[in-house]
Length: 360
Ligand code: DAH
Image (cartoon, rainbow, N blue to C red; front, side, top):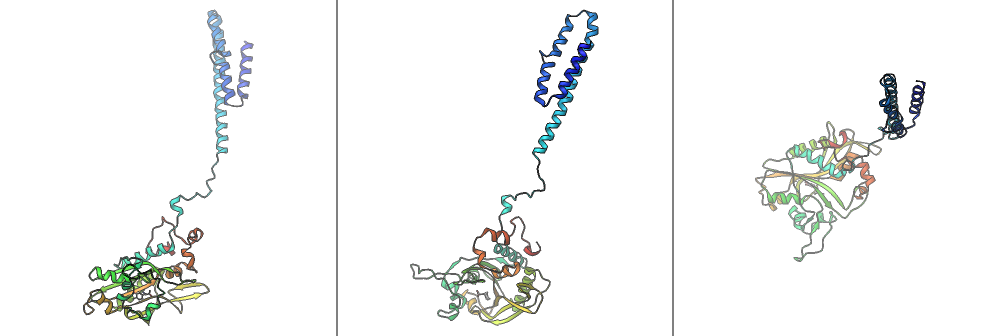
């Protein structure tokens, strides 16, 4: 029947030209739907004689199958095109840098990093951390450390005094971490092996001094603790901290009321322009004060200098941080400027290691 084949040609052309899935769906409804044109043709079969049906049946069913197949094929093409369009529209540029999660965006302050590093190094040598308050009595900050009242060494400390309390006592912002030596010796029996990192305060401000700064104190009290032990501890610390194979140190005689003998220690370095390198060169840089604990200090803590002895040292944390990480000015350390912190700070999810910062 020419009739049927022209219907088929016409329908298949329409299906092929359907621009989108909605148009295709309305074509499906108008052909194969309950009241569709092809369904209507199928319904006419019932009214035909068996002979006619034998001829018409396969033709009309063939038309239905051809339309169904064309609809399915067109649907597949349109779905594919829709997916391609969506993929193109929702393209993700995987080469874009990922924005850091909040917990990865914060920064560890260089001082905290250096305190972690030096704690790890001294812990490895058997030291534990001791702490004391920032506000100290005059007795602990000075007198017990063998600064007699009126002694000129007190003046060297540019002390911040607090207003007198109801006992008339003037507390001070501790000028060094040394009073924690006294607190430690008064609260535990020897052998003692502690480091004391903490905040200290002096009335001073320029490129390398801020009114609040940080020190780490070391104290060893034992029957035989001696200068050779002190030297070994300091040399090992400097090698580990500055990450050098070997480092020469120079012990110069000095004066501190709480040690006898007292020394200042310089470490070997080379300077090229602004850059300082350790473990090489002909130059020297002062990094700490140290000595054997003065017998008067031991006595002030109830220890017998004929039975025990010890050594101590005090080092500026800010200073060694500036040297290790090449930070030329101390003042921005405490400005809380996020740009400075982003530049000089450390990533919080990096684990501090013995030699943390430089190689890490
Ligand atoms: N407390 C001293 C200061 O701030 C540093 C110091 C020197 C500490 C010698 C010590 C030491 O323990 O033995 O200037």
